[in-house]
Length: 195
Image (cartoon, rainbow, N blue to C red; front, top):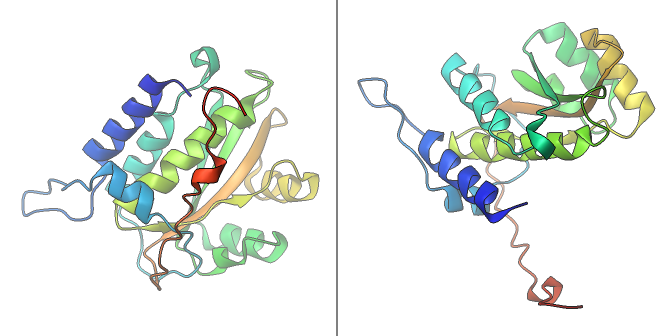
């Protein structure tokens, strides 16, 4: 990823992400670096619905992702239908938390626009996860791609067109627990100029 794309992402998250609203309805932002280092995978949710304004911010954050040749092959499906969430929870092996989550965002790619749709859509998914953290929400990436059985569940449940593949299902909601973020910094994994 080019440095300019990363900087744009960090600035965007810092400008649009929030934890609270003031009396005028204006959102307050959380520092982008704080959101990155505080992000955790949330698998347990409160029953509280996610506000439409926050859903829109999650979607805008996702679509701010870079893509090869700016093709933007992504398609996003917001799922808040209880029956659809429960169907996917029952059939997807690592998405059981959908039975609790008030909503999910399914990140999909149009295979006719790019052979590398899953790379671009991965950036979308990461933006959504970081924005959720910054908004005081919890989320977790549950993979469907490249597993045909999982992709089939999502395609059938959501009536996806044939050229649209799901990359992942991201359950979203207000966290019911507060796991500590993991320190994943390993300097030995950094190489300079050569291996």
